[in-house]
Amino acid sequence: MYENKFFNIDERLLKLDKKALELSKQEFEKIDNITEYNQLKVLKAFIDNGVSESSFAGSTGYGYDDRGREVLERVMADCMGAEDSLIRHNFVSGTHTLTVALFGVLRPNDKVICLTGRPYDTITGVFGIDEKTDGSLADFGVEYGQVDLNEEGRPDIESIKSVLSHEKPKMAYIQRSRGYSTRPSLTIFDIKEIIDAVKEVSPESIIMVDNCYGEFVEKQEPCEIGADIIAGSLIKNPGGGIAPTGGYIAGRKDLIEKCAYRLTCAGVGREVGATLGHSRELYMGLFAAPHVVGEALKTAVYASALFELLGFSVSPKPQETRGDIIQCVTLGTAEGLVAFCQGMQSGAPVDAYVTPEPWDMPGYTDPVIMAAGAFTLGASIELSADGPIRPPYAAWMQGGLNFHSAKAGVLLAAQKMLEKNALGEL
Ligand SMILES: *Cc1c(COP(=O)(O)O)cnc(C)c1O
Image 1 (cartoon, protein in one colour):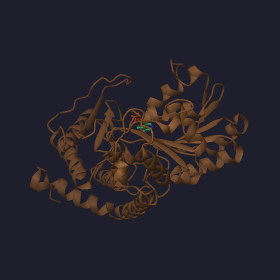
Image 2 (cartoon, protein in one colour):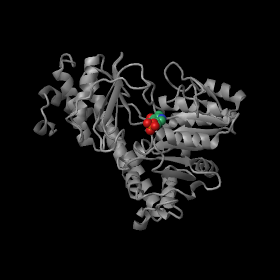
Image 3 (cartoon, protein in one colour):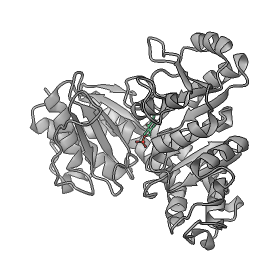
């Protein structure tokens, strides 16, 4: 409500802002309830595992006997409702973390079946889905299979059962977040339905969940409802906007051990890995994460409400149950999409003066525009938006370290669209 004191926002937009907040109210209450639950769960994990000032001390060299690292891995396991975890700054990205988990568990001649359609772009190369690229799982003789989503973009439980009952793959793979697709994200309830189906027809299959963008969005995590192993990125939800880089794997103790042998070396495993003074940031980020995820969720709900009021198609809708922090807004024109991203960028705490333009990116068929003014390069727990310049000109936005600043970013996106005549009649 104070946006107008500091920024130039049209009166008509300010009216819609009020309405959008009103429409979001009930959802905000639900989000606060989940945030409180998860925050207390995390606090309890810190207390139970005896986190102390000495846990933040850094190690160098091999990193033997790094007590802070060991305690953090206990804390993370508890936060994810898992037996064990690895959480390290030297996982370079979410994709790398998922790769370590996949290669840690799978062996030549094993088969992995993805149950949620085609996976996130960067993972397709890890499986070697389109071609047997050097270093991919396919290159090492691990076969990939897939059960497509149904016409509504939902998991096809009947197909999953019929495929798994005769394939009995070593691993069943589930992606929680929608990523940059138009399918809905999976709620914990949806994931449970898939997991129950797998356990019914192929109980020996290891169930892995790509948990990216899903951490702390609901009260339960996939390991609490039967997943064997999960992985995610620390520059998304569980890093709380504080972790400067890194990733985590959590799950069954025997599987985490295998992953540790892949992360470092056979026989050495988790006993090494210098923390170099990054432990404090990883602890602080994990502690902040439930709250920051709540702020990002509020930002997504508010943006959904505001842009629906402006006449655009939004997914999820403001009142829809969410499985991740991503909000998709279909803007209809290239000019609208560009203005949206430029306006959002102008409200970022870092690099607000930069004007993003569509750009040809390696691996993409159309130019892509991105808005990101973040403290951590590429961090999508911070307010960010992007979209390919092609119909239906949709922007995928996510993040927001705190609702008040992120809301200003969303309003500025609308304001820029208004200035470029991309909003129609108000
Ligand atoms: C972000 C993300 C990943 C990993 O991406 P990185 O950019 O490598 O961190 C994997 N799967 C999904 C669904 C994601 O959203």
